[in-house]
Length: 397
Image (cartoon, rainbow, N blue to C red):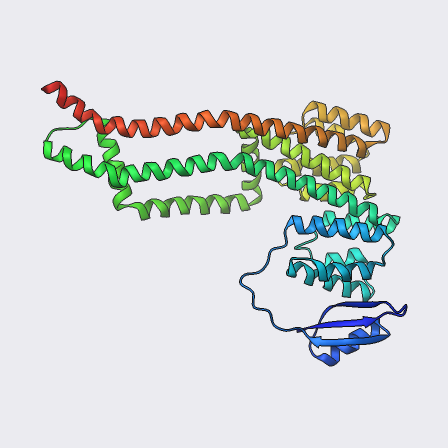
């Protein structure tokens, strides 16, 4: 398939530009003639040399959704808005995708169906909300709501990444320092102790053994570490493994409460956004479950779906799951009874977003001294181990 650039006039005389794929130029002309009154320009797209495939980020998606919402609210036709966005989007890969969506819409597909042809960029949550907006005639409102949702999801991810960056950097520095001591410094002491010809303490022998291991068997250590990582990754890819490890993550002493708060915030934000957009509750719960990111939460949501199908409320199965705090269950129960579940879920999500902020700050302030103590103990142990034989020599003399 070749790519062609075109400009053509609609029945209303509006000039539109875009891209399309076809085997030949004649086939491209035939496609355009079915959609437009007059073809102004049609040429094969020049080949672009790129290094690596450009990634479509959440930021690209937010900008597209915001701009598209503004255009629809201003009264621009759907196809024209897509044409403008396909040419002005900075990410060329995303611009090409928007152009393909435009062609699909022009061919008779609904906007949501056109989006479903690109599941790598537009997930079920996005497409189902768009479909609800099309049916209800509230596409601009739904797009604005989607943009808010994606922005808040991005902010949540950024908070978690920021919280994890500090301990990762400290541990990496600690590993480099320890490796440097074991590979370059300890051998100097080892040769000195060998010249002394005396037995060294057990702690010193242990550090010397570690040094020898790092010097001569580093590739084996790296290979074993890579094998353990690969096995854990394979285990996590299985349904049972993911459930067990996700349950373990929720029980971790410092990170566990933070993971729980993030899971609750994501669950309530996603479900509340879908319900407020007019997506049916069963479908909304199914989408929320599949985008939960935690198998324990996912199974709990599927339990809610079964409960609702049996004529029960959401709060009953939620109360049986330890991952959802009693306050969340009570507020959802009140929201159901008042017929304002989407509003109540949004309030819970806002509350837990603040809770995540507090938990991140608490975790960072707790990890900082713990990591410093850990780093001091490791390096201090190595230094003491090397000086113990020298201290013993001083006792002899």
